Length: 73
Image 1 (cartoon, helix red, strand yellow):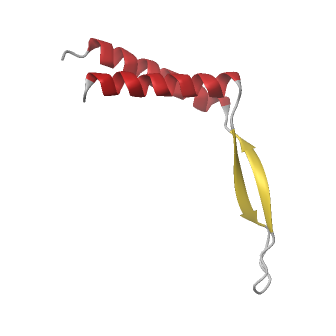
Image 2 (image 1 turned 120 degrees about the vertical axis):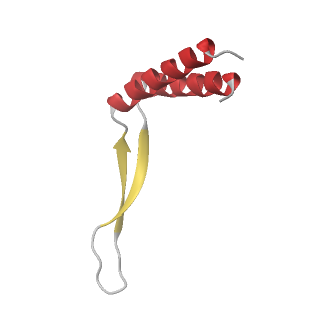
């Protein structure tokens, strides 16, 4: 892999993981409650990303940065 690619991907993961740890992140899902004939009532649910995901992203980003720095051109 290219050295710049490893450094760039590592920085992106590090920043993303830091954001999840510091501010938290949410996502929205649409869930069907039940189905009667052709009628499907849905509810929109907001979910939060667990903090451990941010920690994993930070660790992976740091590892990629170290691998990019140590890689010889």
